[in-house]
Amino acid sequence: MNNELLEALNILEKEKDISKDTLLEAIENSLITACKNHFGKSDNIKVNINPETCEFHVYAEKTVVEEVEDSVLEISVGNAKMIDSKYEVGDIVNVEVKSKEFGRIATQNAKNVILQKIREEERKVLFDQYYGKEKDVVTGIVQRYVGKNISINLGKVDAILSENEQVKGEIFQPTERIKLYILEVKSTSKGPKILVSRTHPELVKRLFESEVTEVKEGIVEIKSISREAGSRTKIAVWSNDPDVDPVGACVGLNGARVNAIVSELRGEKIDIINWSDNAAMLIENALSPAKVISVIADAEEKTAKVVVPDYQLSLAIGKEGQNARLAARLTGFKIDIKSETQAREAGDFMDYENEYEEYEEDFAEGYEAPEAEGSELEYKEGLSYEEESEYEEDLNYEEDSDYQEAETYEEGSDYQEAEAYEEDSDYQEDEAYEEDSDYEEARAYEEELDGEEGELEKSDQEEGMSDE
Image (cartoon, rainbow, N blue to C red; front, side, top):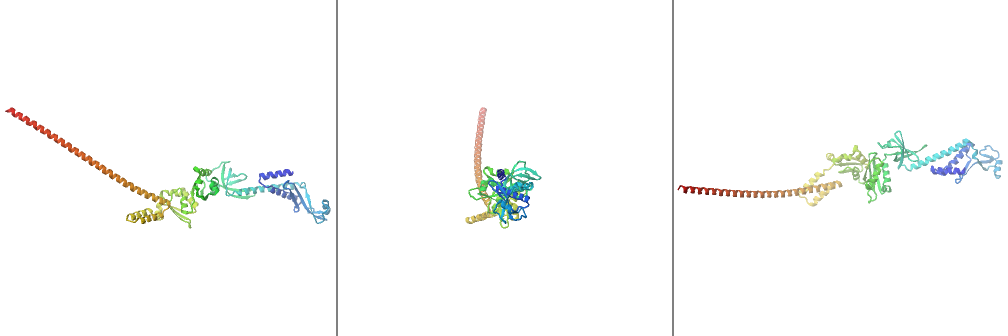
């Protein structure tokens, strides 16, 4: 029997992850309970168990007295000397109790005590196991729908995916494997109660940690995250290594890393931006893919005024305000977005174009070069990096346009002059040609007249001679 008990304890320790010492303690308590049920008292009961062989003995400590009043706690001198002749009145004698003497009820109670202890330890082990996974991601298998909730099997225990923690529009089939974020683990009389989520922003963060090695190792750090489950997520990342691009590391080669996460989230869009300690730059990045003209951020009030081009206003706000809402959660600022036209009308946006025209007029009136350079620098100081680039591009464009117009004008002038010269030459040649033609015709006509006059005179002379 001892060998069978030892084998049973080893199996329980391996399958249920319950230590042998705990099981031996449960057996000890069960024997004490059986003695209490059998004798009515258990204060003087001692149990000795050998953990190596699982051999156990139960002893009842009894006091040696001359006259026995309570047989459970006392023993007579005669009976004590039969055990050992050295016992005297007042000594404590350990009297062995045979477990076979226990009745059916006492045995059943001892069995229940052992089973109860095993169940408690099993629940405790499961609680400790999943309590350590709280705020982490696990893989579960969909079991069934319980009303609007979903029962998920996590291996040794079932979890509940409540309706509030489900992504709107997601439908799961039984036996389907899904990733879940453990919100809370509670200890109950029926075992640990585990609440999981598919909508929590930390789910995306944990997925990036499991997919991106740099994030797991701490080289790339996810500073902030905002999410509207099932639609779009924005995360701000920062690299602790200047040689590592945080956005590139999260995206992966040809988008392999981020696409794996998007696939797990059933097509949810993910925007990855660079984190910046400069609030204005962070807000500008957070509003991507919209372009921003200027950002005025108040760090104390946690408010920001943003000006975007007119054609980018709807993109900056997003569908139903989603882009602006996610950017506000990501940065922690209350963001007021206005178009360039609205900002000009409200007076919140400086008209740099008019200022530049005034600068050009002043420069044309004869300012010296250093002062002009200072004015240009003064103008640029009020611009962000992107605005300065746009200003330089516009300036270069205007210079190129003026140059091209001047060049076109010169080419046009040369062309017109050449054309006029050719026309004049053609005209003079035509005129000279016409004059030459007229002269030749007139001369031929005169010669013809002279010929006719000569013939008439000759005919007259011949007639006169005939008359004579």
